[in-house]
Image (cartoon, rainbow, N blue to C red; front, side):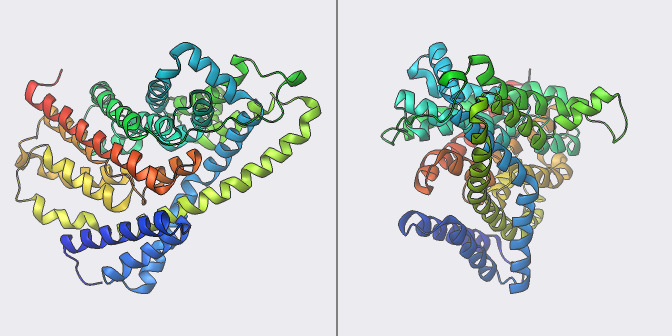
Length: 445
């Protein structure tokens, strides 16, 4: 493949995204086929051989399936189980009693922020997504507002705070102390989450809420489950996944309790534990309903997986164009302070879709440039990592697996996702950059 200039790559990326939007929003073509076509638009546009393009498509698709397939299957089943047993209705009623209907989006944002501290944003959204439609039905607040409030709360901490893999790897690559990064990261992530929530409230106005539907079989005698038994299938997976980073050991080492927690903390196993706990809310004479929900969940997850996998394939083709290589010559001659780490990560995220990959790649590029940027100090390195976290938030669009997780688990179409979620990701990144700049001027605590 002949070398491609950076402006040429950006032009091809914009053309591919435009094709996805037009095909899905205007012509109502299924996202899988729109993404598949976009993959070849990128491959042909940059002069990539057909075989290499096809290999990148398969590798990108396979990587997402390896990472998310069973998580999404278990999460889908858990969501259906909570809905059919009436748990989501109980949880929604409890939240509304505590916050009031007008504050339901803020409650979802805070819930996402807290739940996102220990777990990945996609896993957290899958676990908590059942609350979105239930709250929308109870409050008549648009699904888009509630869904993006939850999603941005999760996203803010995913991009800025260890133990999430991107920031963890960047902290190691940039020689930044974990504890300080976590504390300052929370301080920076809070305004980013608030920006996402405020945009969700504004942009979601006028969109449709969910119409209330009757739940399926519930607890004994047709009664709804208790608040405790309703929240338990959500809380247990979050706690197990959150504990895993603190108990992870080499295979066969550690006490049996530590090894058990390490196994239970795997997202797939933790979500399966949630499924089992949710199933306890189904009456014994409705036991046959469990088999039905399991089958329906597996079928529904299949439709979600092919879209997310196609998004991964699109990201795989973009990654094969080596967007990181376009910055090596540029970065060595520029002195831009925190702006350069931000711009590099922003471009990588927009081009290949993964916040984690963008942060890790950017950290390897930026670290040798710290003396040139005047940031070769403890505080400078910390600010550079936070600036990369800001860049990794934007832009979340069709090549981001999280984009499709939100879309499919909330039922939002391409137009709504671009208007609410994608713009929210841009505002979050810019807000975080402003916070990092403020810290660089006033001094880190």
